[in-house]
Length: 200
Image 1 (cartoon, helix red, strand yellow):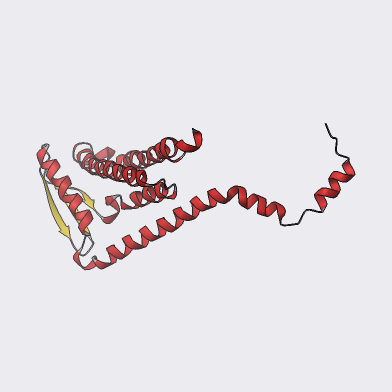
Image 2 (cartoon, rainbow, N blue to C red):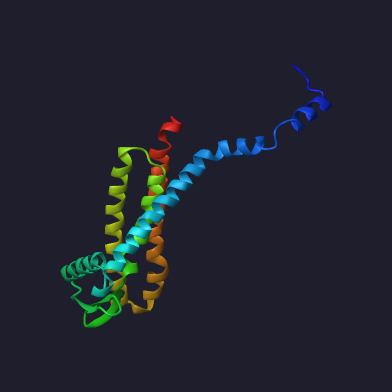
């Protein structure tokens, strides 16, 4: 075993270029920086595209996608015994749910879960792994869409039957379920798809 003299070791340390350690660090973090950059770019592109979509329909009240969700919620609630009608408030860009002779909740743009979807899609594509990325995103979008429908239906039922719990479900329980689902999908993608080749 070769022992290094302290003075020689110190000399070798001093003669390294000043930017050597910075370059070495950047090289180590290059994959992480690449993923972060992809996430930011995809997120911003989707966000601006969605904002453009919203700006083009402001004159007509609630945006078509949110209105479609409201119609589906109304149809399901009518089917399961919660008679529902929708009332347009074009000026304020919202639709009210009139359930069992009560105005219970309102559908606004923020209820369509698109912001959550943008986060989900941006993260998954940041760890792009070919064709399977599109299949996973597609399955995830279907799951999140169904869960958001159930969230709105559940909130309407809670407000109709147990109004005292409405705020708790709206502010904490249902958001935790939606965001929790996104986190679980992220973890599944990372563990079983994105890093599968690296771990094998």
